[in-house]
Image (cartoon, rainbow, N blue to C red; front, side, top):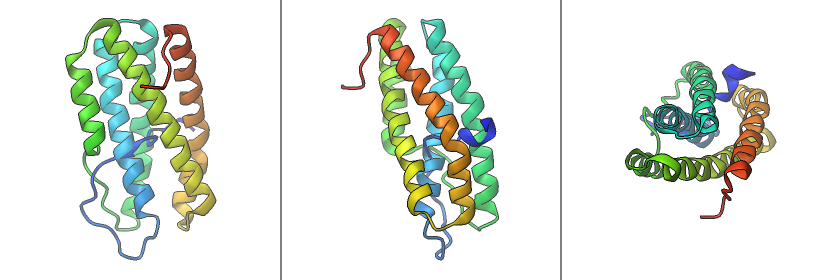
Length: 167
């Protein structure tokens, strides 16, 4: 379960896609999201001012690294090249977090994680419902419960910190 959850969010930009894989957008978005989660999680571990943010960041690094690895293994069997970095919007959020400190960092990170996990849960639910690649669908089914745990946990952290998802 944990190894499947690393891929929560968008992963890296696609270098090359197998023309016959209709689930390529899922692979790309999951890869970019997963990479973004690991990067932001590392920032939260080092820059977070609350223990809850630090602990959540550590969980993101662990779970999303495992899920990213699993997604890479699946993609490699399909000759699907995954992006090697997060998407442009995710990079911009990371750059913003890098300059923030203290409570301002925590609140921004929490808001970003609320949004990212809501989007990731929706992405994985969509793949389960309408994906055509059996391994991609299986990965989504295995990973979704972990993503839901992440969403619930960040919602709890947000409630304790007085943070809402609305920007």
